[in-house]
Structures are given as structure tokens and as C-alpha cells.
Length: 419
Ligand code: RNT
Ligand code: ZN
Image (cartoon, rainbow, N blue to C red; front, side):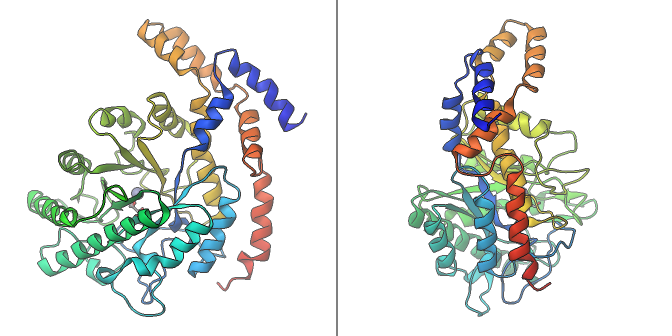
């Protein structure tokens, strides 16, 4: 049976529940996922004086063929994007600046250092998001940045964050699509602090200074990303969830929730409805923690499905900015992007195909038997047939056919790169 025939049959099954598959497609097409560039080069960046990765995050694996130049990275992204249905955004970090062989320190970065990215984004009809890079730098060697006791070091990073917001503003202006600039800092301590308050006060003051700089909010919106622990900051992270939740609510900033940044059994899916009652928007870093914040490639697991459901059934597709954050250097990196991003989109489609109003009603009526029974039965509905058809409609390969294209690309391009 053809993809089309399978689709027609599958569609009937969803339609008997009053679900419009076409309407689901229309909604899904409008969702832009913010695809993180750093899966492409193991968060190396293109700085002239490239530093080793620091900040308590780690990438493991040495699969050949990683991007070592901006041109290579853009070419790899284009390959991945050709295998992912929809129009999306690319999420850059400050270390991906192009400075023409000159050393430009982070506090001196400007929009002009991202001109090539903007041109490329225009050519490929992509939006861009941004992140200041407060790690992999001599001034972040002790794991402290915006909370550093040394004012000069704090000032350096404050300046970097202000410049970053201006770069986000430039993206928004050039691309006609608002950019999200997200601040994540590694600051924390390996062992039990004797003072938890002072660093947090300093973080609050640093953020106040950063956000005092004038940036057009219609072009750039700011987010702050919390964390529970990192390598070397196991006992205490200054920018905890409570810290940023309070800060964001009070200062009208977006909270960014990374799915790997909570206690192991704590889930982001359960936070979305709560947070959206108190703020208009929310940002996500969808990742997959395996026993720790390991940043494995996102798979279509229970939690990803639950995140999709929470966004869709709460009518929050335009309130939750969905970004990805994983980095696996043990597999083909173009495949990693493709797998993770396709899964994120799949989870939204899965959610769009459920009779969510009916399921809500069952709960209101206290009919927990039907609620459980249906939620379980829908797991084996012919979702794959709908997904395959969507992919073909959107001009990208269905099923695992994309893998052949990645293999071709590996043979013709990636394997020819110097190790
Ligand atoms: C680290 C944070 C942060 C980084 C990226 C590279 O734990 O998740 O978002 O992964 O900025
Ligand atoms: Zn993150």
C-alpha cells in the first residue's frame, strides 16, 4: 500500500473521534523549532583562540566529520533541514561569530560578526536565535561569570550579555522574525557553600544591568535558563529554578526550562501549565537526560509525548518557544539533528491528533477508566501513517529514507573532512 493509501485509512480512524487531520497539519506547519547549531561541532565554536569546552557541560564521542568552519556547519545544517518538515529557526551561540581571523573578545562582539549567518538565514528562510557564551573562556575558568566576586570579571560578562541582546535585536530586524536571546551561566560551587545568598544577589544585580540596556522587545525577547547542577557545581548552582522563576516573573522575562535541568524524576511537562498561568510565554530546551544532564538526542519517549500534549491541549503552540539542546558526538551529527528534531515535531503531531476536548471532558466527569483506556489505545493508532504522509506533503523523506541521504552526505562530504 502506498503512503497515500495508508494515510487515507489512518485518517478515517482519527476522524471517527472528530479529529481533523488536515487542521492538525495546518497548525503543525506554523510551528518553528529552534534548532541548536552546537550539535554540529560539539559546542566547539569558531573563535580564533578556541578554548576547551568548560562550564560543567560535556560532550562525549569522536564520530568523524564534525564541522570545523562556519561554511561546513551551514552546509550540514542545510542537509539536516532538508530532512525535517517545516520552516524553523537556528539557535546560535556567541562562539559561532565570524571575525575574519581576528581575535575579538566576547565583550566586543557585534552584529557585524554574524552577517554571514544572517545572509544564510535569509537565503534559507530561517529565523535565528541567540545565546551569549559564558563558558569556554579564560574569564570563566573558575566557573564563575555574572556572579564572580571580582567586579571586572562581572562587568566583562555583563557587557557580553548586552552585546548579545543587540545581536538578537539585529537578527529580529534583519529577518523580520523576533529572536530569542537566552542567558545561561554555569556559576556554582562543587561543595556546600557557606553563603548562598551573596552570589544570588550579584546575579540579580548583573541581570538588572544587562536588561537595563535598551533593546527593542519586538525584535528580541530575553530568556533566562536555570539549572540544578553541573559537573563541578554539584552542590550549588546560583541560577536555580526558583531564582530565575522569581526573576523572570518580576521583570517580565521568559523562563527557559531545560528538560535536563531538574531532579531526575521531576518533569518539565508538568510545569508548563503552571508557569503559563503566570506568564504569557515560556521557552524550552528539549533534551534527554540519561541519569544526569547528559544531553542525549531527543527520542519519542513518554516525556516528549507529554510535553507535546501539554503544549497542544493548552493551546500554547504560540506561547511556548520550543528549542532543542542535545549534543552527541558518538553518532553522525547530521543524523542527530534530524532524529531529534523530527521527534520533537512528531510529538506535536501526536498531540494534535488526539481528541483532547473529549479526554478533558472525561476527566471533568470523573471517568478515569475511559481516560486511561483511550490514552493507552491512541498509542497504537496508526500515527506513523499520518506522519509519513505529512513528511511527503512537506517535501521531506518519509520513514527512514532520510537515513540514506545522510549516508550519502557522509560518504561525499563528511568523510572527506580532516579529522
Ligand atoms: C547547559 C545548558 C545550556 C547549554 C548550551 C550550549 O547545561 O543547557 O543551554 O547546553 O547553551
Ligand atoms: Zn539548555
